Image (cartoon, rainbow, N blue to C red; front, side, top):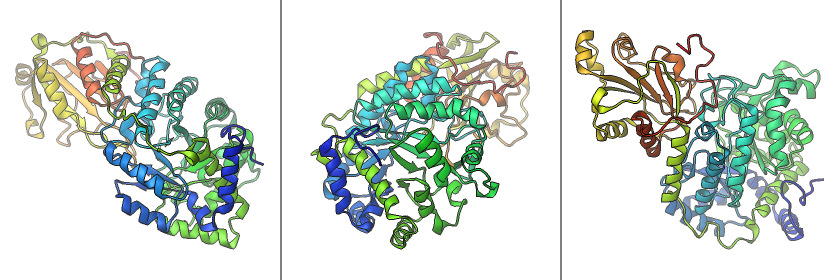
Length: 556
């Protein structure tokens, strides 16, 4: 029996009574509805209420919208529904994960690069404060994956690095900050991303660690965070074959399923071995990593029977809801499994005080406040990492390097939206006294090197290539004309490379002797970068991953 008084819900008698009374009052349709978390892409209140009338959903995820709109929607929606909603967002980098005017504080990897756990805690604090300001009571963060494989493009700067112990320490610090604001955490992506180089958005990926290695890394992280009281775990569409074979002896390879559909991983490993009693939620059910594993008709029932309590989104939400309801009515999904899932969901809501709340957004609106933006500047200042400067180029100055040939790479939207940096970089450099010429393909007319040396004092590459769902790689892509944009003049003109996102770009530009990692792009980061380049501030960041990717010649 689930003990609602114990970890992670810690309910009092009144809270337990509300859970049991509410559960007993629900129809089967309403119970199944509680198990769905929909996504809101700036829909109006009327639209959301019409959706609720069809599917009485138990949770909703916000995508970024103006904070005032979110506050109004939250208050009206929460008072209109029968049971208060778990309202979630991907609060990984700051309030910008839910509000378009929120603070872009730092990526998780950026906070790790400071070498100071206070910055990971501040990230959680800002996420909780700004999230709660608009009504978020459950964050789909932190990411507790370990970036063992530098080729994995989807977690990248979303992680705290490649050292399991440091990932655990940073995650605990983040949870301390988030917890101050009554926002529940959801750690992800069980059983652990970052081993496979592929993306579960596009296929079923694999955590290929042995049971022993998994226990020493992901197992330790999940185990300690569960003991610390985390209330929700998001399970990925990721295989863990070693544990599937251990917990289900004789299982055929073709029958090994991703964690989101795996009874042995959810019930045997997560519930029994690690002792997790909170809410298990699937990662997005629109991902191919889930959809390709079974016929679509079978997926909702299989996920719930495997041990999932909430179903995140859906390729066709109405169809998935109707299928799960039909399978519950027929007994294919036992009623006791439905009740168990809904009891945990209600317990999580009660633990957050939603059952007695009169207001669902915080009275103090901290979204995008000056204090948080100043904290973002401080974090950027501490995190920027000088990976290499074997040519002793830094600091640069308008006196020595006035004429800059700027190459901006990538500069498109990523997993969390992202925004271009080109105009911002040009403005920042110009304000410092540099004369900036931006690269264009028309310049690739096989110029004489002597002419280039007469035109430019510095070649500056700025890569704004950020983690993106459905993007299989984050590597540098050059202009297609005879490799002309690539770093061919490093022996002729001083050349500098700055990465605003992916920390592994050195693998594509090992010939460039001066390399800087920033881990995120924000106005605060660009400001801090200018101080570093001009020598007004020392480099203090320490890389949480191997920026050289184990390649030969890194120190040259």
